[in-house]
Image (cartoon, rainbow, N blue to C red; front, side):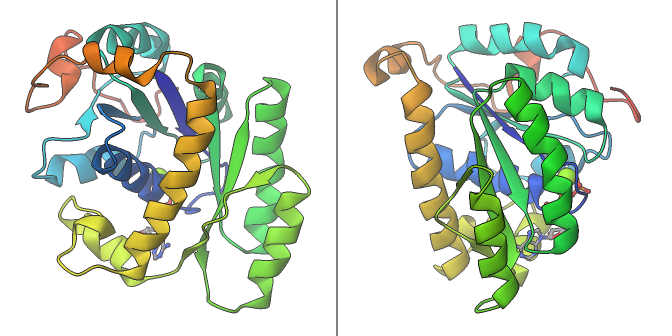
Length: 243
Ligand SMILES: Nc1ncnc2c1ncn2[C@@H]1O[C@H](COP(=O)(O)OP(=O)(O)OP(=O)(O)O)[C@@H](O)[C@H]1O
Ligand SMILES: [Mg+2]
């Protein structure tokens, strides 16, 4: 099983939006089963998932102290990718999640505040020797600040080639638990997420030691409708302020 941490110490950079979209797109592209974990006491990703009608991706309720144990259980259940959403600025939680991650995805808005804040996340990931990918989110088409952000970020590491633009459908689709890919009309937003996932999946596949066929055999079928929390013991609900 691979673990993707979606993290950035800057609030509002798009962690929750991208965590949900990446997980759904990964499932649509046949990379599943995918599980989601929300380590943010704000619980935005959990709230979104609770509104979802679709059964996948599954959602695992955990607390940060239990994450390594629950990761082992998810491995045994045949989950292929775990996407972990993180809070802004709770450094200890972010450090715990990065520690168990195979790939650290850092959403960054093309703004001076986000670019400055990225430094702390980069330092954490580098200290733990974790591969990382920056994703520019919320870009305005043709804005000069976007190309400046591309230059600034590529000096510190790899930048995903698909830039995610500022579009209302990213927010509106999530109101009822969907994503831009699940809206009736094909959109440029959906294409951006598809391209982003294509890139991320290649990065992940490089870390995936198990051949794909072996992974498929381990998939329990079917996965329970209400997520895997029922299979990993009593639901452990994230309490406000829990680290
Ligand atoms: N590409 C985008 N286009 C339009 N709106 C976006 C985009 N990305 C995120 N948003 C909106 O911006 C707000 C912040 O996004 P999101 O909640 O994903 O950020 P976050 O990093 O998880 O925030 P926090 O640090 O508070 O957890 C939300 O209202 C979301 O709908
Ligand atoms: Mg969030």
